[in-house]
Length: 474
Image (cartoon, rainbow, N blue to C red; front, side, top):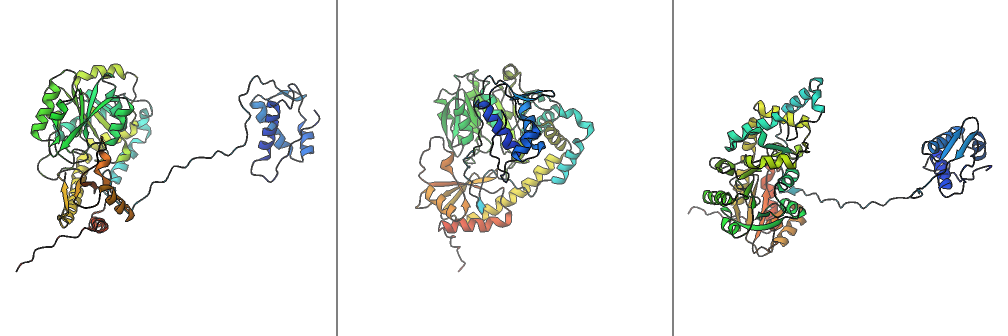
C-alpha cells in the first residue's frame, strides 16, 4: 500500500498518536489492510498527514507491542496475522447510572452514631506512629488467621474483667465487622439448621440469614426481652439475641428469661445461642449486667461484640468467642481463612488496650453519653402527656412511644419535611406488621449536648405536640 488515508482531528481532545493507532488497528481487524502488507515509512506517513514522525513512531510502537504489526530490521513494519479478535474497540461514551444521593438532614437521630469530638486522637496517633516504623516491618506480612495474638489476648482479659466472660485467646476470632463474622458462624452449622431471630431486630442480620438461605423464625420481644416460650414452640436450633440491650427496643433480658434461654440451649447438643453484646459498655442505671456467656455452664453461647460503639465504626474490628466444642469445626471449615483486619490496626488497638487507654476512654465516654442521656430524658419529660420512653437503661438510643392520631409513617414524613431524620420501629420488624402505635428509635450519641433540646423541640413542634402544663402552687 502506498499510503494510509485517515481523518485526524488535530484540535480534538484525543491525542493524534492515539487517533492514528486506533485507525490502523481497526483497519487491520476489519481486513481493510491485508496480512503481510507493509505500512508506510514513518517519514512518508508524517509528510502525508502533516504530523511529526514522533507521533507516527508512538502509534507504530503501540501496534507492535500489541501484536498487530511486526518489524523487520532495515525493511519496515508489516501487518501480522490475527487469529481471532472478539470485537472492534470503538470510542463510545458509557452512560453510568448514578446512585441516588442520600438526603442529608439538619437533625439526624441515627441510633448508630457516636460522639466523634471526644475521640483521643493524640493518643491514637502516638500508637500509630510507633508502629509505622522499620521495627514493625514484619507486620507487612500475613499474620495469624484468627487475628493477632496480642489483640486476642487483650480482648480475653477485657471480657473477663468487664463482662465476666471466661475464654482463652484461642477461642477468639477477629474480623472486619458483624457482616463478615456472622456468615462465618452460620457455616459452622449444617444447611438444615434452623435459626431464630428477635422480632423486631437488626434488619441487616435478617438479610444475612436470608442471603445464606437459612430457615428463620421471628420470635417476639416484650419488655423482658425475647419471649423464650415462643422460641420453644419452634424447631430452631440456634437463636441470635441481644440480651444486654435488645436492639432496637432497648429491653434487657430478665434473669428469668436468661435462665430459660440457657436451659433451652442445654436440652439438645445441636442448640446454641449467639449473643451479640454490641453496646454493653454504656449502662446508666444500676450495675453492669453480666453477659449471658458468663452465666453459661454448658458451653452453649457464641459471644459476639465489636469496637463500633466503644471506639469508632470505621475501625471495622469485631470478634466472636467460640465454645470449645465448636473450635474443631471452625478449624476444619476455615483452615484457609486469613484475618480481614489489617495487622497494623490490630496492634494499635491491642497496645491502646494494653496500656489502659481503652478503659480510660470508655469511662470518659460513659460520662459523655450519660450527660446526653440525662439531657434527652429530661427534655422529653416535658412532653410526657403524649410521649413515653422505654429502653433508656443503656446504650445510645431510646425508644419513643408517641400517642398521636397520625400514623407512624405520617409522623416520619412530617419530621422529614422539617429536615429531621427519625427511625420508625416498624423498619426493624421482620414480619412487616403494621404498628398500632407510632414508635421511633431516637439516637443521641452523635448529637452535641447543646443541640439536644432545640432538636427535640423542633421534632415536637412538627408533630404539634405541646409541653405538658406544669402544676402551680396556690
